[in-house]
Amino acid sequence: MEQYPSKLLESAVNELSKLPGIGRKSALRMALHLLKKHPEEVEALAGSISMMAKEIKFCSECHCISDEEICHICSNPKRVRDILCVVEDIRDVIAIEKTGQFIGLYHVLGGIISPMEGIAPADLTIESLVTRCGTSQIREIILALPATIEGDTTNYYISKKLDGKGIALTIIARGISFGDDLEYTDEVTLGRSILNRQPYAHSLHP
Image 1 (cartoon, helix red, strand yellow):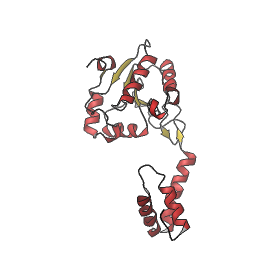
Image 2 (cartoon, helix red, strand yellow):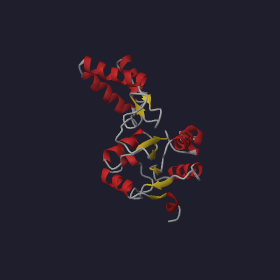
Image 3 (cartoon, one colour):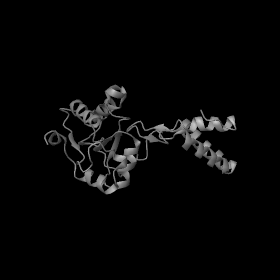
Image 4 (cartoon, helix red, strand yellow):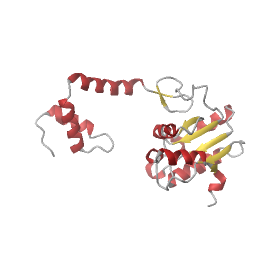
């Protein structure tokens, strides 16, 4: 166990090391970097994080994070309202928006079905998606989930829940390699994958 010259420094390292992908050495470097900053800069950082944790909301329509009850995408009258793009989380919304190739609305599941990690359909916003499709004039749903076994399982589950509702179900083109997450895909490839989407039923028969 490392020995720190300050209990305050040790406490900061302990908290920073809880962040994903941050080990104790990285946490120590971050803490020491912050010590070199002006106290007002550190307070601004701490304040922004605290405010985010306390005041951030989730859009009541698409479940994306938002500053308001309805996010700026759902409330934008210029968005096409009869096409929904189903994604795993907020990072995918950001990635797709950067392509500039999609002008519809989103539905954020908050994860994907993964029995190994204890994530069941009930833990996601799938029922909310089904309800949304029943109360809105949705004509197409684009499945933009990770190209993984868990992503494919979630796609299949959603397709069964929406079967018979008269909604076209499409899936982004497999320009994205199997096992890749959308957030790590370059903008051009992701944009083309959305534009070249295909009927979901066809993707079940390679």
